[in-house]
Length: 224
Ligand SMILES: [Zn+2]
View 1 (tube, rainbow, N blue to C red):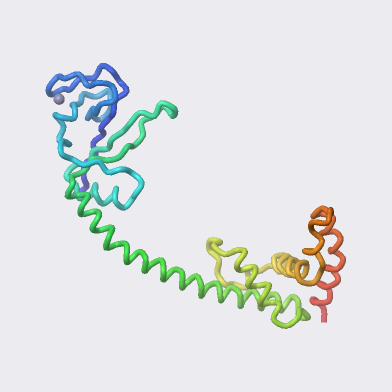
View 2 (view 1 turned 180 degrees about the horizontal axis):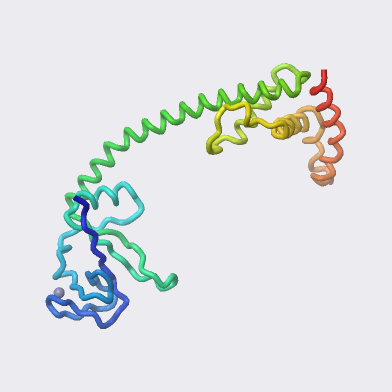
């Protein structure tokens, strides 16, 4: 059964009192109620006496400790700057925190294993991506010197690594994408582009300077 959540306000109001014992609840002290407009109790009259505060920030701990606790008190404090109540943490039973900690501990290994498996899959995908991309480059630039297509594809793979949904599908490599990758490669390996920096020329100027060379080589690589 789902654990019941109960709001606990570190109140910003000055005229609250406990519906059970009648004590006035001072500013900043815990008021246990549905909202500050509802009737509620002081902390001592609430069922949370003896409960432990769990700070937010660990989603698995928050979820699991709540699940194992009889009640869960959501402690809220007033953020003056944002003009709203925010979570300070939750009050749960000590045993619930212990159980949650154990669960997270045993989870840790399987989670690490999962990450490891994902990394292996990614490496395989990268390899496939490079092969397919290299083939596409070779097709479009049949005169490209030996092995350059692999170099270009590997570089592109590195550049776009981490892109969501990247799979080795030849259809994803359009002409424009191939041209840009090949062009960048030529700029850095076949022209004096990189040597021209730091000599008072602007990047745009340097690019224009090497543009003719690049186009000439692109043409050579492309046509039989
Ligand atoms: Zn009370």
